[in-house]
Amino acid sequence: MKRLLLTALLLCCTLARADAPARQDGEALRQLAAQYLQTQSAGLPGKVTITVGALDPRVFLAACPAPAAFQLPGARPWGKTTVGVRCAAPNPWTVYIQAQVSVLTDYVAAAVPLAQGQPIAAVQLVTIKGDLAALPNGVATEAAQVIGKLPTVSLPAGTPLRLDNLKSQPVVQQGQLVRVVSSGAGFAVSAEGRAIGTAAAGQVVQVRTASGAVVSGLAQAGGVVEVTF
Image: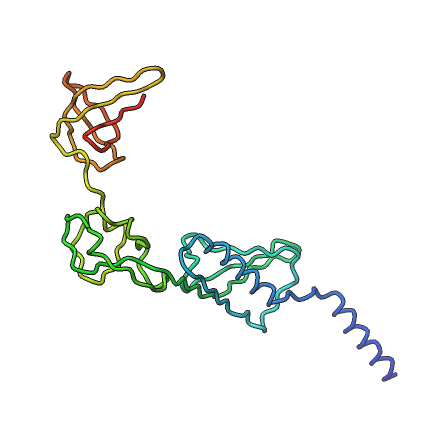
């Protein structure tokens, strides 16, 4: 009798294991997260190093035929970050994996104090190598991005130069006499006018023409405002 009960118990356990879903390979998910970060960071300047943490082995995830990696909106693919991996079917689940992405690159910093509103010259710059993850967002990585630009605030020596702290020199000044060039399908005319505002190259500026009309166009070098119809 005892032998029959033991046999029945073993059979039940075997059937239970057969019905249970297979376990997802955690290492495969870690590699999927690493591949996702490699793709997302492909356009970053410098040398990229990716370290992805391991999943907690105590967490059971049913095997998934097509797991997909993602990041939450606003998440950066560098620095200390998180990659989500989700399974849609047959057993839906979502797991989050911690990762660290370092990007060793050159960035541009002020070699001397920079005064607000004064054009930046090449001799005022220095190139430093560092981890992009430890730098402010929008830091310049090439001197050409900042030479001739105007700092919107005074900057001490050693400050990494952020593009949002710089502005282009104006090519049209308020009150300046400018040449308005209008073009469209099959025609092009030009006339003089006076700028109502100040604008850098490519920015929109309003101009009052000799007839008193106000038009808007794109400021260009040489005191030209392009109006396209």
